Image (cartoon, rainbow, N blue to C red; front, side, top):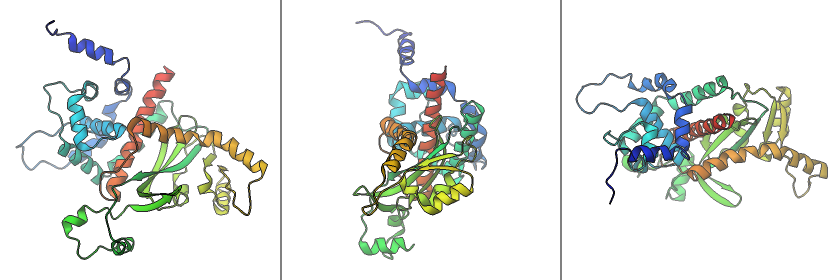
Length: 338
């Protein structure tokens, strides 16, 4: 049997380069530019110098990017970082280096959430995209997707009280902390779902997420439509499906000098004309590009399921997913351009 060589690991890593998307992502993204924003969470002086030195904030941020790209739990993230060479290399870790455990990963995400940094990091990277040749162009597409949360085993009376903003009197503080009272049920295509909605605005040219919002699942898509409009897009064209169409919406878009391209929906009493059907087909050729965004997320990481409790944490988790998509998409676009 052949004895291991000092070059075996190097050879293995060089072969990984051929098909490892993380290697391209690591090379193309200027990770150090995120450091000033991330360092905010270390502003509090440590009460004591005792104990283990905190992990580097950029390394921890990259851990959350990995977690978001592959839709991993905190425990699975710890295991995968220890197990996969590609993850270790992405993080710049050697075999002798310490690996953040699940609790450390959870705590870092909590601190990002409490400091409100996820949105700032997303906006910061959007500026990086614009400055590096990927400005929002050729119009924008707005849509939403449901993000499932763990179903709550509540009684009808408890659910009714929760919807009114209350809390059942017999719930202990420990039980209440485990209950997501912010998520809501919604029925779509005959299927009931419980959780939140990820509302996004994607530019037509690059299919990058430019703005997003997170609400509970029962909020109608049209309620956040106006807030998602990206005024920095080089085009005034706005595409959306029929859920966003109303007389008031069209009039408001026209008044603000937008060019609405919103799908029409027929009813039993008023079917769409052949001209309206043709208009839908024409618009859908562009509007359907946003399905690619949601599709890539699902193929790369599987259907996102929120494992956190509450709207604040859900917003951070979904925001990280959107940011991770943009990072990954940027690496793909840059590789194609090169």
